[in-house]
Amino acid sequence: MISYFRTRSEGERRMGKAVTDVALDRKLEQFVRETAQNSADAALEGKTPHLVYRYVQLEGDELGDFLEAIDWDNLRPHLEAVAEEDDEIGVQSMLDRIDRGKLPLLVVEDHNAEGLGGEEFSKETNYASLLQDFGSSTKDEDEGGVHGVGASVLWGFSAFKTSLFFTNPAEWSDGKSPRLVGRIDLPYHECADKEGNQQEWQGDGWIGAEDDQDRRAVSITGEEATEIATNQLHVEAADERSESPGTTAVVVGFREPSRSRRSPAKVVKRIGELAARYYWPLIVEDGLKVSVEGPNDDEPEEVHPEEVDWLTPFIEAYNQREDADDELGEAPDVAARDVPVTIPHDGDQTTDGEVMLAIRSEGGDYDKFKNQVAMFRGARHVVKYRQYGYTARTAGQEFHGLLLAGRARYSSDADGDDIVESDAIVEDFFRKAEPEAHDTWEQEVSKLENNYPGGHEEITTLIEDRVPSTLEDVLIDAGTDETESMESVGGQFPYFSGGPSRGATKRNTPGGGSSVVKNVSRKLSHPGDRYECRGTIELAGQPADPWEFEIEIGVVDAGGNQFDTVNLDDVSAHAADGSGEVDDSDTRVVVDEDVSSVEYELSSESTRDLTSIGDGKARLNFEIDAELEDDS
Image (cartoon, rainbow, N blue to C red; front, side, top):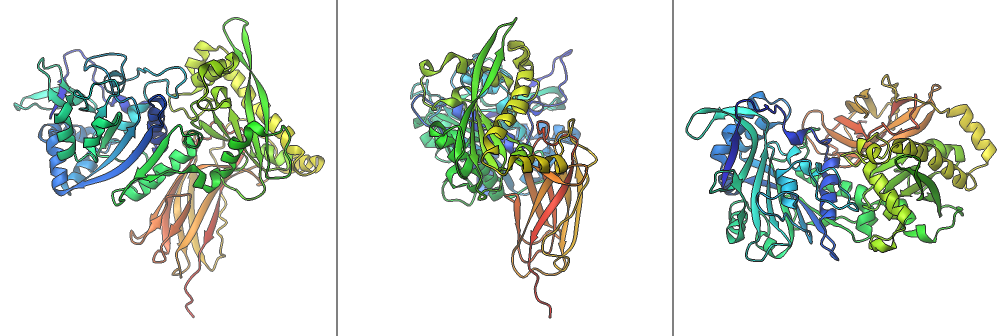
């Protein structure tokens, strides 16, 4: 294969930032959201797509084969030129890792999917939309993606801004498949060409076969593609790709741009957790199958949301919603009600529709994500878990809830003719309300306003008024005495309007007593729309056994009373002296008995839509479970 870059012509714009770097939030959560949605949208009719995430660490001869295959001698000078100006991508750090003999890859492979069909210089095809025409989309109106930028994560998580694609398009003949090609998205840079002449380069490039018209590198097809993928790129089961429609995407030089490095095992575990968190409705309805595999695993491990403890109440509410009454019985129980939504059109025209609110009363078994509503439409991708802790406290009853919009009110295999017109309009309304990251309905989005003028105000009214009002009505009869509850709320949990406080107050409440914990330091801030914190937990002595800690971000009122919590998006930790094992793959961190001091970092989910925060302030609550060795 050859690598190909386009020289900059005089007068052309110099792109100092890669196009795929500006599209989306570059957190692992976004990587999973986008890749899973793309595979789900590309499902073959009547088939369940199977998505596999593999973390691969290339070393030795396999690394040498791989580098030779991607034309490393020509590619590296371009990377080194970018590294001289780079303070964000991490190119030099990954070059150093290769020099030390290792290259991490994240392979994203789907089966029973359409694959990347379309001719080499086509437009409005899967191939063109993903590799050639950034920002375009070929998806139908009932699919999850809409903006055509989600796949940018495949480059955003590559330190070399390079991804390879080995695909078997379902529409291609057996003799033509599979197809192998690579795409590079570096920023503008200057370096010598193959003849040693200094040149300006636009940065976008290709890896593949030489084109007879020298337009760029093009796809390699058929048996040659299989041989290269198997013998040089070491793509697992590459010989089976031609028999299985779908695509294998290889993120070259995988790293997480928004955080420090974590182990491959923790990356894989985190991917599985995120797939379950955001795609459990699709997975439990057999609309998607997800597996993960680390470099030391013998085979992929399937993700089963039903085995994730905190998801149980959400799944129960989903499975029982159709037969549920509109009132709650003794907890735990499920109730379901329709909540009106009015879809505005141009002029004075409107469509009266409904969304379903399914509510499961909490009997005290599931604390995580309680008093939250999982919101999704027909794509069955949870857009957001929205907190309604203040409503639960008003009603005196804790709960887990679902807000189902449009086609989500029907079974996943419902025929289009079975969808009521108003529900089809509601589906389109909320689809257009999703920003590029597909992580909220409450952000002002131009696509929504251009198609449904005033739509943002309707969503605000629905989510901040009608939903909590309906929740309160259902929950209050199932909770404590209404008068007693309201008096308590009025005295202790006043509601605040406005944005979250940036001057947050903090409180340290380590469990185990002062004899166990010597010091807990913390620095809590709120840059952008998330809380971030870093600090140290130091025990007073040597732990007798592995110990654990968990950190909660609590929202408090002016009197210091906590009335809500903010979900954590990510937690990382490591031994302060660099030795010993720390498992930070979940929000509850497990620390080896050899480690007595831990440095931690955490970030919350976005707070931009959390009405309950208002002008409240945040504090940190620590729960530390440790036992020290007896020195007596």
